[in-house]
Amino acid sequence: MRKAIIEIEPYETTKEAQRSVFTHIRSYEVLEVLKIDHVKGLYVDLIEVHLKENVSIQDLHFIGNMEILSVISSEGDKHICLVKGRESKKAKDTFDESELDLIFTAPSMISEDKVIVSLIGTQKDLTRFVDLVRAQIGKIVHLTLKRASYHRKDILSVLTEKQREVVIAAYSSGYYDIPKRISSQKLSQKVNVSRPTLLEHLRKAELRLFAEIISGHYKD
Image 1: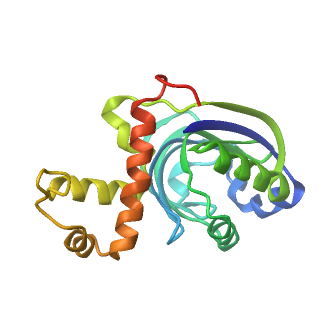
Image 2 (image 1 turned 180 degrees about the vertical axis):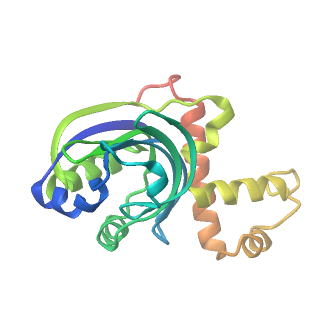
């Protein structure tokens, strides 16, 4: 697994599509990706917003397609907010069609003239994402690629939301016990997915976790 930090200079078409986001703000930084669901196109983030002059955070209820759920703290023109957003149909369709298995993480920063995104994934998926950015979003100004790292307390952060749900359910239900206390068929019913889908989620999650655990002990 690799982590990529990509700095992008948006194309004019991208800037125009994002114009409404920057009506009242200069930029925002994603501090923490709390939840993301690409199937429904929904996400919950903790962000730091930099407001334009003479704009009050109390007057803002939305930032583009992001609803401000709560203002956590404020200092000058900087405000840390909990937001819930919905991906645009175009972005959702593009991500669905590309079938990329990526984890969006921090640091990420968005302004009118610069975008920084951070992702964790395989070399193959990250390369495909970079190609997608160049084709549809903007010019790659800077790209940093390194082995993904983690703190043991948040190792599950390398998993998607569904992978995390399935792994936790499997462990707590005794799927990994010897002998097993629950079959894959019954576990699939418990998490409301088909048995083949359950096994696929578990296989991908296990591969990601193993890759993170032994990271640094071998060379690709």
